[in-house]
Image (tube, helix red, strand yellow):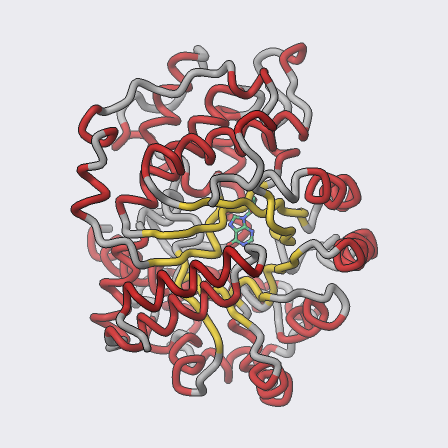
Length: 427
Ligand SMILES: O=c1[nH]cnc2c1ncn2[C@@H]1O[C@H](CO)[C@@H](O)[C@H]1O
């Protein structure tokens, strides 16, 4: 188990203006919620002075980054029984400790989301604490994504249900206060969910409504190979977003094939691709996207999902939309069974990001769901240095790529690009 954990640890990590409007745009409701007691040392800005801020992160799930200690505290406060009463004890329930599937990972979210759901104070706190964590890991600017509809209902008290609008206001308020207190710039992206096309139209309306108050784009997340993965509602919503000038990114080619990436870019008008690894299975598409300078938001949790992919394709080959041989050839995997059982380490040396780097593709490094993967951004950077031999120059370029692909308005983006260039000594 210990060995497996070590392998997993390596594998899973490798696999302005504050909120443009001013605080008066946030509802009384969001403002009235108090932040957790503050640590005086942070308020003095000592942390910011010690950590060099030079990173830009574009792909970071707000719910996938919630601190386990916060979950524990909130569950206690709300009188929700948990299987353990220490952080160590709840980790197996709120994060993954062995290679599994995307579906298994989404189940982990389903375990802990009810702790947060419908609790305005916690929703705001999560966003606030994320700013603190990002500042600690040297982040200058980040975009965090979430699905407001997942956070509305409270299983505890139906009467206390929040609206998606209130959730967005709470997250905006938390990011706004966190940005101010920890000196990091934060924006958000709202996620449509593959299995929930019923959210899609409203999500675009929310993005439109809050576009000048910190929401900079939309995403499509969730199970890429599920029954509702390709739903016309999602496509319609993305086309409407394009019409309204709302920025767009799509999780595609993470566990799905290159067809999913093609659909994201050419049907949904995605300006960035979340993950996109399986693009390389289609050399023509890969070349075309490189010519378009398409940005791939690389998250190192990839290896975890490819194990599931193997299980998925072995088990459901007939219904799978991806050619199994193409998939295997692309992944250059070790024997299937050892991957599935976790008997061999996931081979992060085969991560498609190495192809991206070799081929000069436009990509960035992201921690994705740090709490669920038991990682953090600094660890991701250490691992890519150690295992992929990425040097300062390339790391500077990856951060510049992220700044150039970010969803900020052009004037703020130019300022960020300038800061990143200065921080990394890029001419
Ligand atoms: O890596 C991922 N791929 C696809 N969906 C994900 C991933 N991580 C999290 N989510 C899904 O996105 C929702 C909003 O943040 C999460 O609740 C989770 O269901």
